Amino acid sequence: MIFDPTVKIAPSILSADFSNFGQEIEAIESQGCDWVHVDVMDGHFVPNLTFGPTLCSAIRKHIKTVMDVHLMITPVDPYIKAYANAGADIITAHIEAGPHAHRTIQVIREAGCKAGIALNPGTPAGAVEHLLDVVDLICIMTVNPGFGGQKFIYSQIEKVKKLSSMIGDRPIHIEIDGGITVDTAPLVKKAGADVLVVGSAVFDGGSVENPSVYGENIRAIREATGG
Ligand code: DX5
Ligand code: ZN
Image 1 (cartoon, rainbow, N blue to C red):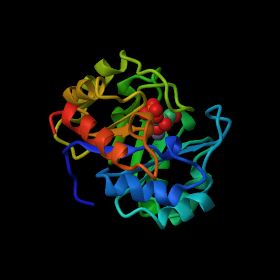
Image 2: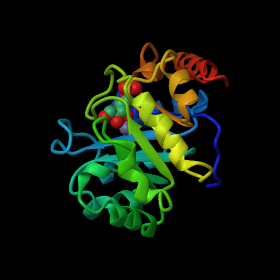
Image 3: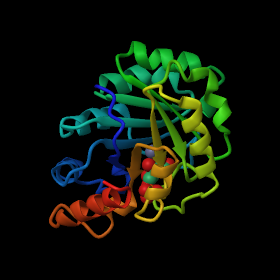
Image 4: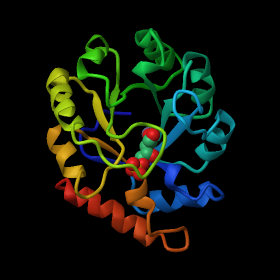
């Protein structure tokens, strides 16, 4: 994967129809999404439970773009290989998931994936300073992780700006996750983000029978960021 700094829309399938992942993924990809974001939750690090590695492996068969796996689990290191084997292109772990984030990044890379680190809203940008030369992606959570459809936390915009200046010209994606809409997308793009995870604002109002709504939603968010 060559580094691409342009805006990428990554629909979170947490907002898809759980009985129909194959067709949902085909619909969002045919409607122009760039990556597919898979939210893995353990009912412990976050108060919700979602996708195990076997389900990720089944989902992978339908993804033609990029499988972006967001692990909201602790401990995380023992499960990385299973998600890599399931076909993840990018694996993002939380810095709050354990005391050795640097080791976690190494484990992800050794498993053959691009490595991301995610920060909860309460974690300052400075927490990832020691990781800037080893990560491929930094995910700023703009909601408290666990559920789709929550309200964007505006205080995170300053954090994105700070992170963007810390990163400088390093080839690191800044991904924003939570509460992205046509209103908040331009704010985070301006602050320095290039990957926008979007759950409800892509899936709401559409369906596999009516996928053009997904396309309209994706285009509206892309256009709001200036293309
Ligand atoms: C929250 C997840 C997000 C979420 C995004 O824990 O990581 O990916 O599903 O959904 P929206 O866009 O609805 O906030
Ligand atoms: Zn996510």
